[in-house]
Length: 516
Image (cartoon, rainbow, N blue to C red; front, side, top):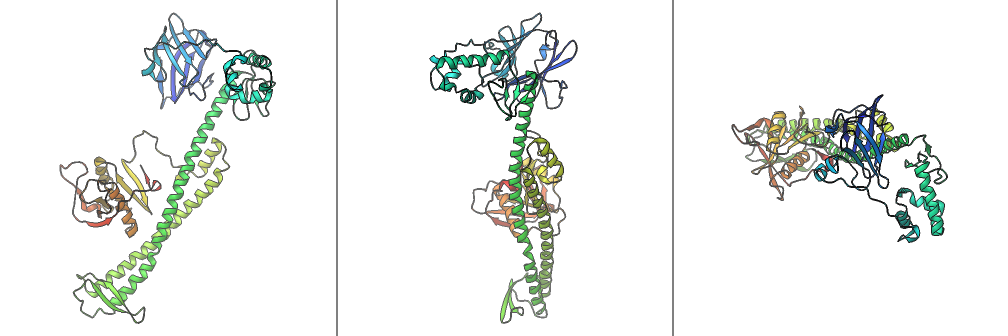
């Protein structure tokens, strides 16, 4: 098939896999090679199209060379492709812990598919002749003896072969004779099958009887089907594991968010307290305000008791009453917002439970893709950025309740946070030390996060600073509109026109609260 074919290119788009492309007299030809130590394979693939994105080329100096001969080493798993009018070979080493493909000129390796720095310029490893002892002369347990005497037999089947034929109960010469006949069948009359567990086998049904095996008329098709089936299963298993981890992360995030929302919904109790306090103050609006930040007045909501009320001494009693009525409105809005947010999270959580239930019945990639399509709007199936790709956001992304939180990664990242955030967002930074800018995205929300949420964000700001080892850290809190860049200042440096300070312990975000 390869004789007279012209080498075109070698392209890889997956780790340990490469396609060798040839132009034949009548058709294009692709030889697929897997150098994965766990599943080495060589087979022709009818799909000869070349994937152009995320791919790399090898052996470009070989383009245009015509194949002269292809042969397999008698005693080792080497495949040699020799080219006309040259000493150039492609050598496929298909065994051991480091299967590889070498381009050689004579005995010298001039290019390697894997670990080129290690192999380029080295001598080509030569096939080793087999010097197997007789079964009766081999050492160790019976299985070990079979491995020594018959190293050509696939080890993955040895336990079952020994058990089925009761080889360990036979005299050594009879066992040796039976193993010889099995080996002869493999080499001269192979029967390609894919077993029910996905394993590829060349044993005849007589030598290795199993139910549910799929039989093929040629070895190449069987190898190709077995290889791609196993690859799909591996991809499916990895995707399933990643999904399960993400489900756990989302479940923890939803539970935390619902707890935060539940705490925020308690603000309705504060609203009642603020209204009562405002009414108590209004009952004394005709009286002069004492020069104090606190006053004690009769509480007509609880007969016979007094209520201690904090005041702003710059305002009169009526002004302080208005301040408490405004606090009541904010608390009511916070309650309404928390209720809406809790309803949204409950909807997502309910869908997540549905997905988790259906996932238990998903057995292959096709069913998984159908599940993804059904719940494509759910954040579980939001596409993650590939490792190594340039980050879409050059800062960390987190969430506290309904609020997005941005955290700078370095000085340049801090500048970008200043650029990307809104003037009404809340800005935080550990006071007096180097650290990350932290932004709470307000998204035009009328109410600030509650105290517990602000303290958590401040704790994150303390954690991502030089003061993370302190028991308590002062953290600046202000609106972003009161923070400005220094002219000609270094990256990350800012000036603050107005600030509050929160004293909080540094808090490391949980894994489910933060993404890079």
